[in-house]
Length: 157
Image 1: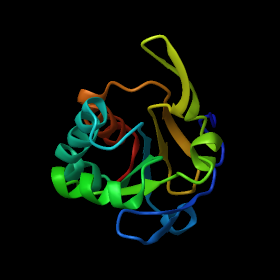
Image 2 (image 1 turned 30 degrees about the horizontal axis):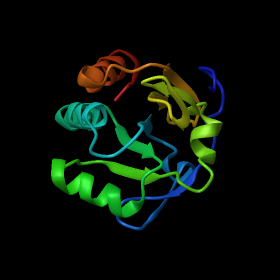
Image 3 (image 1 turned 120 degrees about the vertical axis):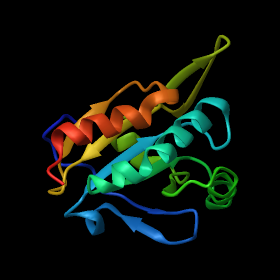
């Protein structure tokens, strides 16, 4: 995982509406980049909805929220519509390169079965493109509140 203070790894990924999103184009503002395993599953839905419920205040702090999983843009579009998510979801399905660069792809274990997948983690990237905060483990049901609290204490918006 990139360390606090290091340059955030670049990305260029498709969003749920079919557009390309590049980290370089987001410079000048705060970016909340969160990695999650799968659209419309219990933990991922809790996390997305808590970020949604705190989104207006997060945006008021000058931050954009971007979710990343290995799901397709079509899956993301359904997830966004079903839960009225006001932020962008990106698909990292081609080799999972962005998740790998952020240390958010690796071996997981569920019910005794090991497999490779997205590891739930969040990064706040400052307006200069550097990693300002890392959550290597996330509690989905209140993560939006944690992000908002951190931004309230650390951003200058």
